Image (cartoon, rainbow, N blue to C red; front, side):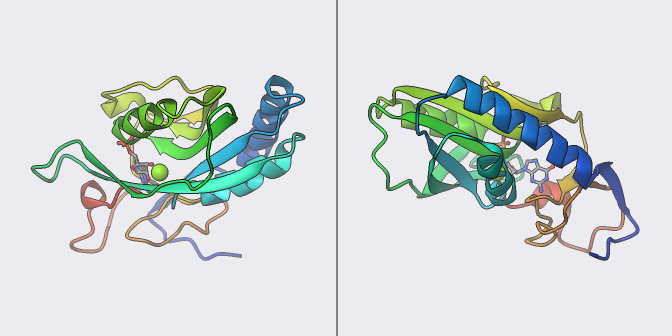
Length: 190
Ligand code: 5GP
Ligand code: MG
């Protein structure tokens, strides 16, 4: 069992996540029956969700990853997005499912989805574990959404705080007592 800090408040217990991920896997498989989609995970946060989601899907898949950095409110380069690692699989004519951990401002996916669309996939769908509508600037269509959580800084099940806690099987809200210099607002977006 993982040891959880006292100021981490449980938001999504592991069994709730697993149930929802299985439902999403079934739905995706129905929609993509007879196809073999390319599943694109957005590093690093989506790795855990992706691993569970593809195993809940009946259709056979290819897996690739992209890593995208965004500079948020705290820097002057607001909204600038950089693709640190692009997928290496050609997607023209293929069904593509992008898998993201959490959608906050929506900038990252607004940018990367339009990038992928230019490559003429047969279809481009989006699965996100969590949608956070509070600060949304762009609202990408989320075809498969796990949960909506209004606010707060979340960790666990892929989501990090200063690089840690992705390995927690549930999702927690960090409520207080962050270590100095690592306030949630100054997080890396990845
Ligand atoms: P967006 O471009 O939608 O503002 O944010 C994209 C990325 O910021 C997410 O994919 C995620 O990696 C990070 N992010 C946004 N909200 C949270 C949060 O509450 N907790 C953590 N750990 N990361 C977040
Ligand atoms: Mg992410």
